[in-house]
Image (cartoon, rainbow, N blue to C red):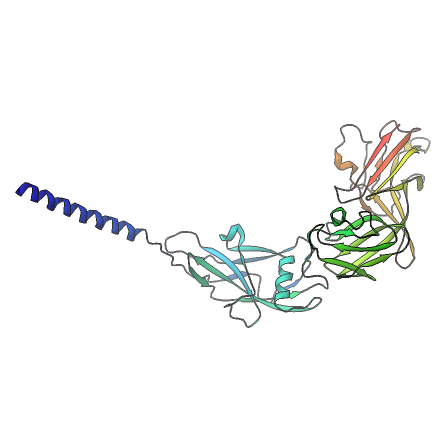
Length: 381
C-alpha cells in the first residue's frame, strides 16, 4: 500500500516537472520582435532633383543604414512617401525594399515615381517636392527612421500611367471594329509606341488592351489625349508614333518604299505594302555596281513620306551595324537581318547581298510589325 502511494507521488511530481518544462519551452519560443530604428538615410541627398522619364527604364536609387534585431534575425524595410510636412501616419505610397523587403536599398522606376508624384498633387509638366523615409519592421513591430528627406521631382507633360500595351482599332483600321483583331503597336527603346499600318476611310482609336473595356486614346493635332476618336479620309499607309511620356503623337504618311542601292544612290526596286506592317517585292533585279577593280553590293531600305503639314521627307531603315564586311550565308545569325531606323548616309548601316547574287533577281519581304523584331528576308533566284 505504501509502495503504491509512493508511486503515485512520483508520478505526480514527474507530471508537474513535465508541465514546468513545457511551459519553460513555450516561454523560450516567445518571439523577440525588438528592433532598432534606421539611424541614417544615405541616398538620395536632401533636395536631390530628378527630371522624370517614365517611359524609359530609368530608376532612382534609395539607400539607408541597416536596423538591428535583438535576436539577430532579419529586419524588413519599406520606403514611405508623403507630402512635404506630412508625418507619415498615412503615407501616400509605401513600397518594399529590394530583395522582397530584406535589403536596405530600393531601386524605384521613374514610372512609379511619376505616379507617386501625381498622388502628391504634383501636376504634369511641373516640379514639386516629395518627402520620404524608411519603416523597419519585425513581426508587428514597426519603427520609422529617425529622419526623413525631401527630393524634388519634375514631371513630364505626358500621362501618369503609361500602358504596357497599345492597339489600334476601328472601322478605318486593318483589324476593323473587332477589338480582338486590333493591331498591336510596338514599344520602342525610347518608350514610344509605333505602328506601320494602312488606314481607310472611317473612325479609329487607340486602346490599352484588345479585350474587355479598354482605356481609349486619340490624336488631336500633334497631341495624344485620353478618350475620343479620329476620322480617316482616303486610303493611306502611315507610320504612327505615340509618346505617352510627353503626350505627343505623330502620323507620317508612307507614300513609297523601296530597296536603296548605295553605289547607285537610288532605289532599284519598289516595295508594295502587303498589310500588317509588311512590304514585299518579287523579282527585283540585283546588279552590283562595277567600279572596275571591284563591285559594290550594299543596300538598305528607303521610305518617302509626307508629314501632317504636307512636307515631303525620306526615311531610311537598315542594319544595326554601321558596316557589314562580308555577305550573309547559311551561318549568318538572325540578328544580321534586324532592321532599325538609320541615317541618310549613302554607305553606312547597309546590308550585303548573299554571295553570287549579281545578275540574279531577289524576292524581298520587309517586316515592320509588333509580332517580332523588325527584320527583312531575301530569297535570291
